[in-house]
Structure formats: structure tokens, C-alpha cells
Image (cartoon, rainbow, N blue to C red):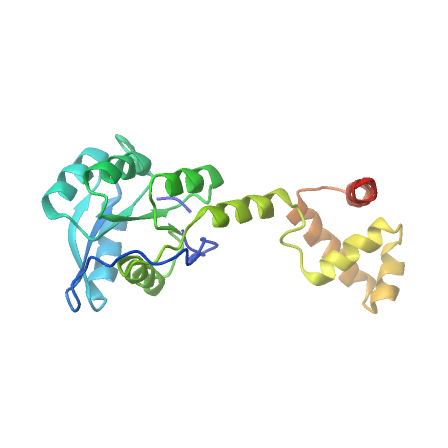
Length: 235
């Protein structure tokens, strides 16, 4: 299982609109779980079964078994791991999109991967959730998807890609100020005086922003800021 959902980890959430709800009012949402690790699968099943109005109707550990059981039990929602012994969760969603388009897929994975996210969207996933998600959040996502909500759309993928392309996306406001002042050529002491903080605090900010930006030296930060300013001036 990759990754959704942040977590919901940093999993993507977006209300992309409402789809007709095929469940009858008051009837339990029928859930199928696909994961090749039995302990993980059983743990998720226990969480789902404890939740009001949710019922686990099938489990599977392979692509072939998942497709066979989906044909038999026709779940409302299917939780799908992406990595399986005989294929991928993408294969399952691709097949179900033709054979049982009414089944709503949710990707539940360990991989926070943009390509997998985009392909899952293309194959009809309604949500993309990371396995670091808390139990209550899993059931919340299942209920939302069963009710017709879509927590994943093209704008989510585009936004995530843009964020990942920006090495400063995760910087705090203080780290951004330090970044700009490094670009202005100020020393750590001068930055501390400018911001009204201790020089040690400035060093801590620099250590953190280097890590977040994937850089190793202060001079690389200065060069990056200079490059950004030159690009902005040209535009």
C-alpha cells in the first residue's frame, strides 16, 4: 500500500464533486480490503468493522484473488494496496473500471509517489491514503467515498507536483526570512541582529533549511537565491 492521506499523513484530500450514492439509506457500506500482508489486512479489517455503518465483506492478498472476490461480493468500496505479489493495485482498478465501475476504489499505500498518485487517479481512485493514517481517518475516508465524494482529482496531482518542484515549499516563515537574508549576503551574526534572534538560532534555521532544500552548504543557498532572483528579473 502506498503513501494516502497524511497520514492521512500528507495524503491528498480534495472534494472534487458528488457522485450518485448507490448505497441504500441505513444499509452498511460494504468494504473489501486488498493487501498482501495478512497482519496489516486484519488490522484494517478490525478498524473498519468496529465503525458504525461499515462492514468488511471480503479480503484478498493478490490481484487475481481480489478480482475473483470482487465479482462474488460486489463491495461498495475497495481499499487497495499498490504493491501485490502478482501485479499492482493499478491492475485491479483498471479491470474493475470496466467490469464493475460502480465499485469505488481507495488506494491505501506506503508510497507517497506522484507517478503512482497520477496513475491511480487515471484508473478511477477516489482517494489516495498513506498507511501512516490513523484508524478514525481511514473510516472517515471510506464513508466519504461511499457517500459519493471524491478526495482526489487532477488539481491535487498538479498542486503536489508544483510543491515538490519547489525546494522551499516546506520552509517555515522564519527559515524563508533567513534564506532571503543569506541571498542578500549577510553573515549569521548580521542575520541574527536583523531578525532580533541569537546567532545560534540563525544557525539552527540554516541547518533546517539546508536539509529541507536538499543542500549541503550555505554558499549553495546563496547561489540558489541569486539564480531565483535573476530568473525573476528576466521574466
